[in-house]
Structures are given as C-alpha cells and as structure tokens.
Length: 318
Image (tube, rainbow, N blue to C red; front, side, top):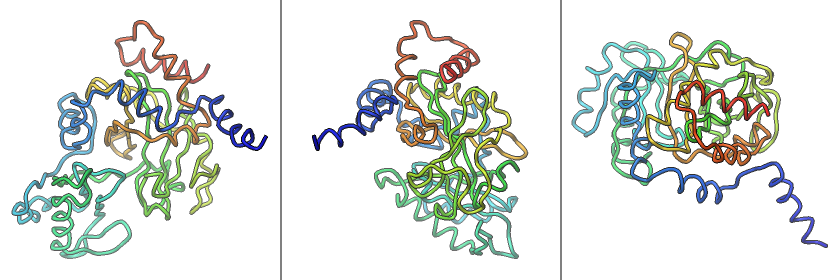
C-alpha cells in the first residue's frame, strides 16, 4: 500500500507527458543532436558568426579578446562605446557575463551602479580567458558586444537584467516557449537555476501564462508585485520564425533558442543551447513528450520556416 502513494505522483506526471532528464538525454539529445555539431552552439563566437552570415539578427560584435596581451587593446576597443556586454564564448548559465551601462569619467558603471576601472575589467577578461566560466574549465575567449536594452513591456517585471524568450525547437518546429524574467535572487540574470522566473507562453498567440519560481507557481513578479500573466509579447511571429530558422543554422534537431526583445532593434538571437533544461514544462503546465512524438510521426517535414511555425502552433492549440 505504502509504495503506491509514492508511485502515484510519477504516474500523474507521465499522464501529463512530462519528460525527465534521462529521457531527454537518451531519446532526444543523443539521438537527434550529432556531437560533431556541438561546437557550433557551445562556442558563442562561432554561433554569432554563423548567424550573421545567415542574416539572423544578433547583438553587434564590438571585439574579441583571445589572448592575454590583447587586453592591452581594451581602451581602444571600448573607445566608442559607453554601454556594452562582455561574455565568455564557452560560458553557460549566465556565468561570467559583465554588463556595463554608462561611464563616470574614466570609470565604467555596472548595472547595479558599481563603478569599475579599466584594470578591473581587464582582470575580469583575464579570468574569462583562463577558463574560469567556461564549460569544462577550458581556455576561453571574451566577446565584447552590444548591450541589449530590453523592451518597455518588461519594465515592471524584470530586476536589472534582460529578460529572454527560450523556445524548444525540434526538427525545426518550435514546440514550447517561456519568458525568463530576472529577479533580485538571480542577481539580474535570466537563468532559472539562479532564481529567475520562467513564465509559460501560449505558442499560438504569444500571450504569457503563469510562471514558475523556485519550483512554485507564481502569477506576480516577486520583486515588483506586477502581474506576469496576460502580457502580449510583441513581434511574436518574427520570434517564432527566428527560433525555427536556427535549426538549419547549426544542424541540430533538438535545441533551445534564446531570443531577446531589444527596444530599438526588435528580436535578437542571443544563443542556442544543445541541452536545454526542462523547467519550461512546469511554466507551461504541459509536457514536452506529446509534442515531440507527434513531430516524430510527421512523414515529410515542411521545408519552409513559416510552415514549421504553423505546425508547432497547431500542435500547441490542439
């Protein structure tokens, strides 16, 4: 009798079509993502270069520092920019990202108002090069790029950082999306495991649903108190087409695509993940498995991006 009550939650979860970590790794990532293409997404510089060649909108690249002595060129690289972001090419989970928003005389101002000298920024870049923030601790490169100014839509539901939209794309079909909102707990980062909120999005119309924060369902941003449900994401059609088109860019069939909404430039692709997390299911209160299996049953996948977007939206609405 006792064991049945512990088994029941698992059965209930399976009835919703929730996919677990082992199943994701074994049945989808290993099966559909060929390892030889991993460098195309694990190296953000390579991803950005591919995107720019393909005409996909990304934050502009101001400079790349690959070895220590290039740090001496920092002042020259930054001379024309008051706002910028520095990030490791092989980073993950938002680690190692430094955002500068303005200057005060010869100092640089972080998002939280703290001022940094050029020497301190150089030290941060040196840490990036050493592999402090990279996957597996491998030597890395530092990218210096345009700082995204997020859309005014998110003014009351974000703490300091930039919200992004994560979409799971399978065989070129977008199947589930969530909005990731930075919080005080996440220190302004949009990563759920660091304390950001994941908000489900109706894939068919781009309207936000409820959110998940620290494994709890929430309807308001914990720092601002503003409602997170019912927001209509602008440029939704463009965001969906941008996400669907990334499959062809990196030749991986199971990916997570992160897109930001810049106030001036509109949707920009930030990065592609070959091992996207599963919290998106909780945020949407839907499991991924039913969508994945229906797409696996499609005998001839539509070639056009628009048709694949329509297929994903049709499955989500069903």
